[in-house]
Image (tube, rainbow, N blue to C red; front, side):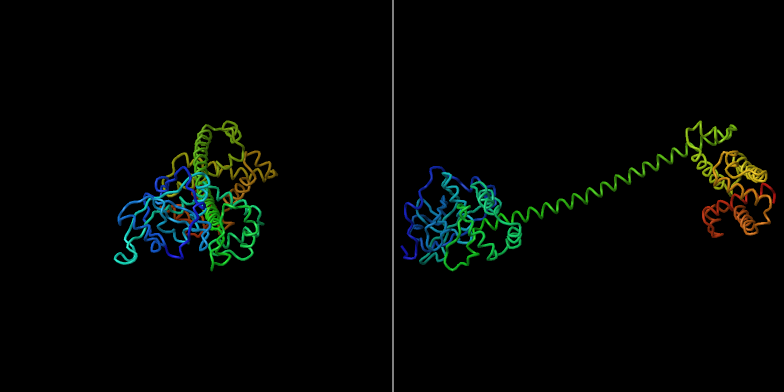
Amino acid sequence: MHPAIYQRDPREYERPPATFDLDVLCPSYADAIPTFAAGSSFHQEALAHFHVGQAVRIELVPEPGNPHDNRAVALDVDGLRCAYIHSDTAAWFHDIVTGLNRAGYAVFTAGAIAPGSDPDGETPRGLQWTRPDLEDRIVLADLVGLREAHERVVATFTAEERQEMAEDCWFEYSTPVVRALRTRSDLAPELTWSTQSGLSEASGVPVWHHVYVRQDVLDRRALASQRRYAKRLLRRRIKAFIAADKAEQREATKALRAQQLTDMMALRAQGRTYAQIAALLGIPHRSIERLVRAERRLIDDAAGAPSPDFNNKLRSERVERAALAVALQAQGMSRQEIGARLEVGLESVKQLLSDGKFYQHPAANTTRLERARRTAELLAGGATRADVSAALELSPPATATAMRDAHALAQLEL
């Protein structure tokens, strides 16, 4: 045996009674790729008991007493040490295997005897083994209590120390973090610190102090991403709901107003007063004014086409009401009294008085008269409300007034 090979004390490892087969119990083995073990060149005497290509069962044996690496994990076949897990990987498996051994399980995996690095020389044989992936390793570590051990230590840290750990977890920990972990190592005897010569103190930190902090950082990032996505999705859904609700309300309001307008016009045709119409429809007087304005727009929109008798009647009533408003004002009535008499609001009274005075003396307002005449010419040529507004550069209210004046002057033959 090579003098550099560690002579394992038989009492260092006693095979537990039960077996834990990684290749059977870990789902990742379905896609696992065999990897070469380390140190097979020093164990050719043991490997000589097997032939190349032979499938074997490999036992993972921790060697905490190994002076070269106290986290070393040997790979035994039929009780013979044939190789080692590479030291960087052994740092992951040592505490898992030790934990399973404590629980009464010997740990096995699948492997095979492979050609060595020098098939025709001093190293004719090597050893290949299959290992679980990161996800399965974390499950195994949780199973043997490594997460609980890590959390016992971190629970004693300040918020600043935990933040520093999260920032450094992808690299070596800073000296203050390493010292804080080291002074609390008695809280987590399940986690092994490396005593391998040549390693920095930061490199000797149990690998699971890195793994679990990294996992927490990734979990928080994933949770934050999910929350941001959920918020965006919720905002979109709320906006869509509000938009749909508003659209539905607009359609319902539009339909209701159209029905109210139809009902009002029918009641007007029966000779009902606005007060009676409001009472019959169960709406306030202000709503009647709105319906009257809508009725007026219908009259104005009929411009350019032969007016139905109903529209002509409404226009005539408008001219008569405007004249009546002026006459009532001449009798000394206030606008409030005129509104009460005509069953309209103050704004309607104001418009009726303006229209009535213009209809009596159109020449007194040359600008309005000229606008009404131009509008009449455009309407005679088949123009629409939009055409009139564009041609005369009028606002919608001014366009409605001009069209109303044009019809009224034609009716009065002015």
